[in-house]
Image (cartoon, protein in one colour):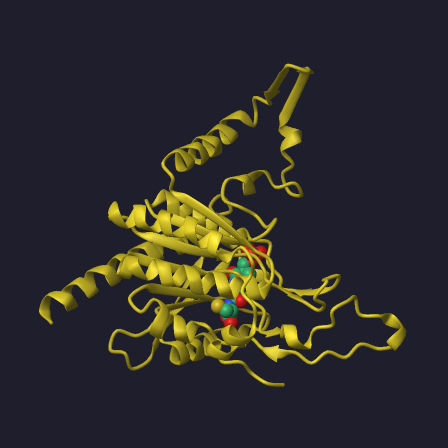
Length: 319
Ligand code: 9Z3
């Protein structure tokens, strides 16, 4: 297996066709919010796919419904952030997630009288009104910009292009990398053009390693931003060591570790200790079944991001 550096990845893998168009919308959004002195969060959400054929019939997927990202985006908005929500096509989105087709089908909350008289069931109306009010308000004020990806290639190109734009927001930018990103991929040069045929017997595929883009992100693309990545493990014992290794390797600000089955109940924040010598960990656990853990996660990050902004200001003042 060969591994790609981020330079060799972008030099050999083709950009998605609509990249320029997607980025010009993001650019305008960022410029407006920089002018208005607002903090801006980039939230990535959902899983990336790895296509196995150029005319894709089969692909490898990463687990993620998009709940963490969509829920957190709402909380960042409620804290006054402008949010760029970069998500896997058809995964959950802020606001509409409350009425997802599988867990809470919205048709169940409507009452039908005749073809011009449809209403919301009185029992559901207050909750729906609250969601609708926030949704309309966010859209009227232009606080949310949404983009989609499907493949790992689209994800990487979008992330790099958005980072280049968002770097202009300097320390006011926060990255919340909750998307579940594939570690392995098949370079286009190695992909079969057409559907892989079963007549050839068993299937063996050797995949290459996806470049670790957090490194250039921290060092080159957006060096002043506050960057938070997520670490998903199924073995509890790996969470802290893997989070520390990521911080050591990439030098960003926070890794949030979560174990697959307990991710909605508890997460661990791992960051550098204040003397820079070691690491500190702090757990966030859901206190009651009423609240969502993303509320606590985002509250803590907003606080830390504020400290980051102020610390950087002091540094600039005393330099
Ligand atoms: C996460 O750990 C997310 O919290 C979940 C959220 C995917 C578990 P759901 O969408 O689940 O609520 O269903 N994301 C994983 C992030 C990831 O893949 N990180 C990579 C890594 O650690 C690159 S930043 O290497």
